[in-house]
Image (cartoon, rainbow, N blue to C red; front, side, top):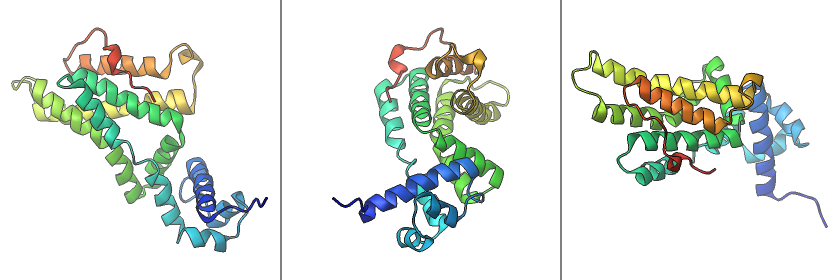
Length: 213
């Protein structure tokens, strides 16, 4: 039996290797030759499947872009409960990162490299959170709150930073002091603290908010 890979299999092998290298070194830190060596093919073979390193990088990002429907399903499931829907969306997001930490590594590299297209891709991934928080706060926050609009806009950014830091601590550089707390426990505590900070207090999040990966 031949061990020769089919075209689609070869393409997927190249894509998987490139994803790992981009996560480890960033876009600018990886060459086409290095990716080709990682899968034991010539650069010419690689170019048969991907026209350029940028095309390959874009394909790696595209593998991460299938979450939006999960968010929609979560919001529909929890109806009008802003708290439970936000907790559910957060669980969907962290499950995805926990299963593939390379997503977060590539995002962090993109922040350092300043790749405009890549930054736009990751900003769009966070947009579901920020849009939903802005919508929810617009519904729940009293209209006489000082600087109401600034508060609403800042809240989404604050939550984004909190979620990212929890993921870094648990997925990229595990800390001994957090070893007894699971990622999901930290996530639920984070959501609870966030809601309290913006004036929406909920002592204990509903267990329904936990979304299985």
